[in-house]
Amino acid sequence: MNATVESGTAIRSGDVATDVISKELAAPTPTADGILDALGNAGFRVIHPETGPAWMPVTSRSLARVHQCADLVNDGKTLQQVAETMRVSPRQAERYSAAARELGLTERRR
Image 1 (cartoon, rainbow, N blue to C red):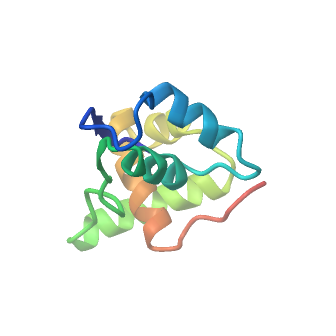
Image 2: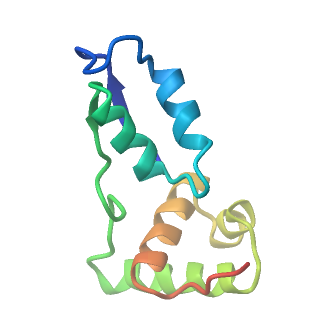
């Protein structure tokens, strides 16, 4: 998760970002949102990232490419292999993969 944290006036004296983050990471189930919330509560200005991918397919051709990417990812291919197979840049493969996840086309693996 990419988010910007800027120093502001601390609500509690002595709180620095590393202390706040360390304390939150020591929680039983730390989450990225929990860390950002803790930083915000400590007086740091936190800008939360946008939800969802920045790009979604709008043409039938791009949607077909998203489906192709989803099939490759579901077959266990890495994004680098997807990019090579689809003959696109790794960044474009990431975009297709993010759109496929958003559309529910990829399977979650554990």
